[in-house]
Length: 149
Ligand SMILES: [Zn+2]
Image 1 (cartoon, protein in one colour):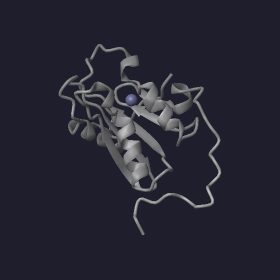
Image 2: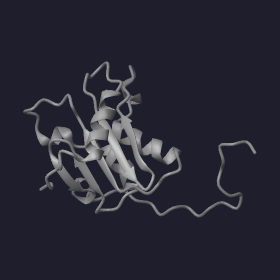
Image 3: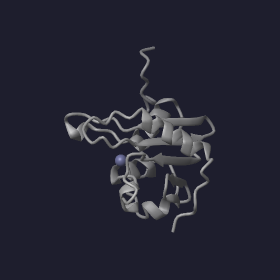
């Protein structure tokens, strides 16, 4: 059972705002995600593509943006789906399996996931058995860099 949401939660408001920036010309189903951490809030929205397999979800968009900005520690995630019908089942509000697996790379079982209109879940409630590999040891050459210095 999810915990109830606070309607005035700033993270939910950020997720709702991110959904307004979604690029969803095919599904017309906008999704926004807002990730909170020591850095503040980083948002993502779904970005569809005519080649549907290339579409990226809002949740992964937020995580990838945060990691690209140098952040790997997160406090909470909020997801907003303003185009979801009022009578849609709660299952249609949940993050997809790909997003859950990507989240599992960075968050633990107690990580809070707020789903607009539904409630707040612990990550373990959404994804109880993630696929996890131990990190590889660093190579002698050190980490790759994107700047050519
Ligand atoms: Zn997804």
